[in-house]
Each structure stands twice: as C-alpha cells, then as structure tokens.
Amino acid sequence: MIVVLCPHFAPDTAPTGEVFTRIVEGFVGAGEEVHVVTALPWYRGHAIEPGWSGRLVRRERTTWGTISRVHPFPGRDKSNLLRRTVGFALFSVVAGVCALMAGGVRHRPAAVISMSPPLTLGLIGWVVARLRRARAVFNIQDVFPDAAVETGAISNHRIISLARWLERVSYERSDAVVVLSEDMRANVAAKVAPRHRAKVAVIPNFVDTATIVPADRTTAFRRELMIGDEPVVMYAGNVGFSQSLGMLLEAARRIPDATFVVNGDGAARSALEAEAAELVNVRFSGYQPMDRLPEVLATGDIHVVPLRAGLGAVSVPSKTYSILAAGRCLVAAIDPGTEVTRILALSGAGVAVPPDDTDAFVAAIQGLVGDSGRRSSMGASGRRWVETHATPEGVSREYLSLVADLVSGRRRGTGTDDHT
Image (cartoon, rainbow, N blue to C red; front, side, top):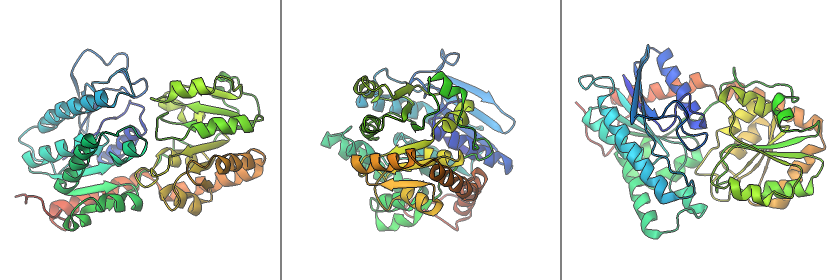
C-alpha cells in the first residue's frame, strides 16, 4: 500500500497533477493499493472549481484505493506570498490528518510519497510516515525557496532563513528525496550533510505520448483566437514571475508577421496584458480543459520556455516534454548546461539561448519563423526522442523500485529512524 500526498490530481489541470495522476495509474497497473490525498480542483482559476465547494474534505472510493480531496485555502491575490504560504500550511495540516487515516489506521503502508511545492508537505509526509511506520519519499518538482528568492518574490531574510531550514530538515528526515534532473540533485545535495546525500535520486518527469500527438496546426483554438495562417509563437503555462515573458512581448514588437499567444494564467498576467495593450499580434487565453491540451499545443508552430537566470537548476518545466510530444519545436531561454538545454541538445528539437538575453531570444524565434522546414524537422526529432526517453510507465516502475529498495533495506536513508 502506498499513500500519495500531492496538491493537484485529476481532474485538476495543473501539470504536476497530470504527472502524479499518471504515476498513480502506473502503481495501480502494477497491482498496488494506493490512497491519494490531494486538494479539491482549484488550479485553473486559483479558486475551487464549480461543483466541488462546500466541504472541507471530500472522500471517494475507487477500485484501487481512495482519493481524499482537501480544501486548498486559496487566496484571491496570487501575488500575496504570505497569504499563499498560510493557505499551503493549512492545506498541508488537513491533508496530513487525512493521510494518517488513509487506507485504515491498522494497515501499514510501504511508503508515503509527498510532493513539493508546497514545501510544507515534506515535513507533513515525514510525520505521517513515521507515525504509520512507513518510508518517507519526498518528490521535488521545484526547489523552494530558491525560485522565489531568485525572482525576488521573497526578500525578507528571516522568511528565507526559515524556508531554508524547513527545506533542509525535510530533505534530511526523508528516507529518499526524488528530483527531476542532475542539476536539481546537485542543488539538493549541497544543502544537506554529507551522510544524507546518497538518498537523493533522479527520476525525471514524463509525458503521455499516446494522448499528446502531433496534429494539424489549423485548429479550432486558432480560429477562436482569430488567428490566420501566419506562424504562431506560443507560451503555454503559468504566467508568473519565474518566466521572462517581457522578452516574448519584445519579440512580438520586432516580428510583426507572427502572432504571439500567451495561454495560461498567473500572478503576472494582468501586468503582462497591460504591457501588451498596443501589440495587435499578441493574444491572451486562459487555461483550457485538459482534453484540449493536444489541440492547444498543435496551434503553436514555435513554443517558448523562458526562465529567468538562476532557475534552470531548480526547475525542469514539464511543458518541455509536452511540446516535444506534440511534434513542435522549442526555443528555451534558460541557464546553459541545465536539463532543458541537455534535452534540446540530445533531441535536436529546438534552440537554447542564455536566460534574459532578449536579442538572442528574438533572433532564435526570428530564424524559425522564417523557416518552416527547419521547424518541422525539429518537431519530428523531438517527437522521436520523447517516445523513448520519457514514458509514464517507466517512471512509475522507477518509483516502485525505489520504494522496494527502501522497504528491503537495500537503500536505507541515513540519519533517519529505523523501522521495525
């Protein structure tokens, strides 16, 4: 039996929710009993979806276990970091109580797998694992507080110190810490005592290549946005402060013969829309239902992943895999030598330029806008690569193998309590 603690799960639309939904499906396919503790669907509008409100916790039985959905305590102001932190903490506490009871208190799970962000789930997962005499596995999707510090979202030194203390304690108490890339492993390993470094494992994310497939660029979504046959440059994802989306607007100014689409929502969207008010070749669209994701991705001829300097080693945007699965080329503005640049080098699916280098970013996009043959070749190369390197079945097997090693003692996290 496995208990999973995560902030998003189907039908929520968050990319990490899709990742953990597919991992759980892999566990179930391997015959595991799984109990998921997650939030009520809320990612799309940063508010609980219609039809889900009215209760603190909703619990449903499945053929393979249970899903407990907890109120996420979202705040209306996405830029209010203190309010969001309080919300995450409240969610984590209630989720922890639900995890203590998941599957029945008399049944001992093999492992409790928790996810960050929010960072608070790490310590909650460890407490639940200890009380239930299970192994604690901490999955890191984004290294916090590094991203928030780099973007200036957190500047108070006391808050930063507290977050770094919580980060270190969560890593060192866990039996295993799972990260998405070698860059993230080096980052996490540098923050813990040497005896804890062996517990940090790399298991990358993945994409559902059966659902996201290359499709015709002439989509209904393109028509809804009143876009013609011109090349479309797309950013799809969270519109936050980690992304250098101002460069995308500058590209729109310099490349008037292409249309630029920002598909998503987030704390920085309103300011970005205001800045783009005079640009007739820029379109904004909110998150679309998950079943439209292949269509949305197909609408873009060129996709972009612009991360601010310093963030390439603390995050691997999951949209990278989805773009490649859709057979589209990619321009990434990201720290050199990090995971996305390695993926592009291995796959031949796009171009990587230094972060926050507007001229290089615009030049890369301009070169692809004028060369449809190159775009098609890169897209096909990316699709071939992702079909063999990032499958959900393989990732689920890696997690189950890790849990089996922890339970058997072949891979015992050092510095933690023994289990009997």
